[in-house]
Image (cartoon, rainbow, N blue to C red; front, side, top):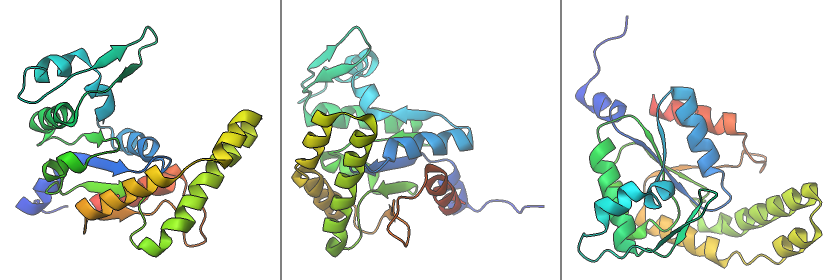
Length: 210
């Protein structure tokens, strides 16, 4: 029979599981898998930023500028400012801050890092701990995209991926390491330099949670 949880253990159980990371790391796929495995709600923060609900909640907040274009296929585009994105994240944390849900957060979180750094279940995917590993990791991501385009048989996409500029991913890596030093970094590569499966990443994260 299990003993009673300590207050510290309770704080982990009743807090959101938060994922941030770089493009191409498989963050969203892993976050969805963790939510499904644990039987808890998955929340795409980018999707909430494009929703009318959160637009109405934040549009009159100081400094907020909302520019959203909604298309018939359900996609959202726009250039809302960082104050709006911060407001949406803050509203989500107010609503789910003491709940066990999965929050999948897109790139560019440095403007709101102070809202996240004290959360106990924060996981970072696709960021090498050691800067010396950045170039091999970026080369791996680039080759993965080329391989995917090759399987699709799309010659134009193959050429585009071969010429992909990874500087924006490098900038994201640098920002995450700067603002989230000491947090739980999850490597998407195994000891042989191969990509871990979604199942392997999911089990690793659940193990860390327990």
